[in-house]
Image (cartoon, rainbow, N blue to C red; front, side):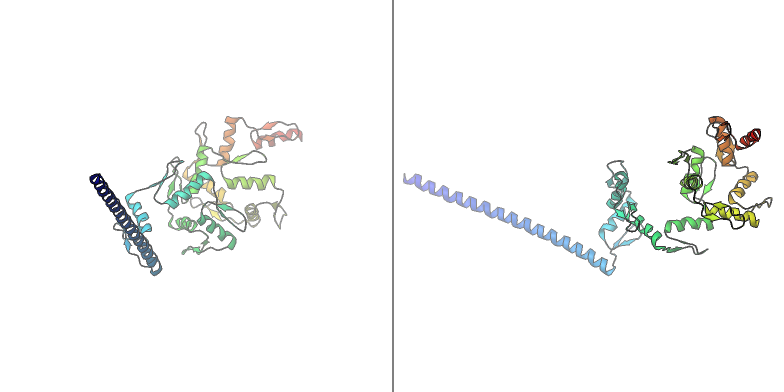
Length: 338
């Protein structure tokens, strides 16, 4: 019995020693983990401090090995490197477009969500990007910080100045693949392409008439649906609802003709008439019928031609209700009622 008791006590001592040894090992592991965590935290704090210090001092320790551009923040340097590597780790879940920066993805996503978090406090107009709001604010302030060094004209956006500079350099970056016409601004090419496609996305809500350009819709609204006429000719008292039409009309009194053809020296008081005339010499026919492919040098002639295909008769006699395809035909018809 004494032997059993002795053996039992030995086992208890052995178990106690084993547990204590396990506790010691666990404490050692925890200490090592804690020290590692503290070391990592110190390194992070050091990096953050160094980045902050570089930001304050203006020091730029990160240099791109490919282009030599320098950065004061490691994050900005890493984002820049993706330009060279082509890496785009941020992917839009809706359309699959990829981006090198998370901020670029966030801005892109607003196209899908329609979110416009930046609102003008003066007129209530909202924007999806802060830069667009900043540009918009210049409309209210009248600020135009970007000035053309050649002619002195000022702009509220740098992009508008860049587009304007092509007038001086005569650089036309955007060319129509169908007719070869070139444009200095991409928006002008996009508007021009609607001539070929026949697209008319802007529709008048009052009469249903559609237009290929938003400006044409605005002109239509002023000309047809607005009775307000702000501009009155002091010589004949004729009134106009558009400043441009008023100025063109005034040239009729002054016989001023600003636009002269360099080939035949014929002069015009309207830029549009001058441009139409120039096509006689160049043979250019940018307005094409989508149904038969026939080309025209004036948009108005194309519009009249299209009525052959559509059968449209927009000119109606106020006496008998007969309709005609052409205005001149209606004029001849009116003689019957005289």
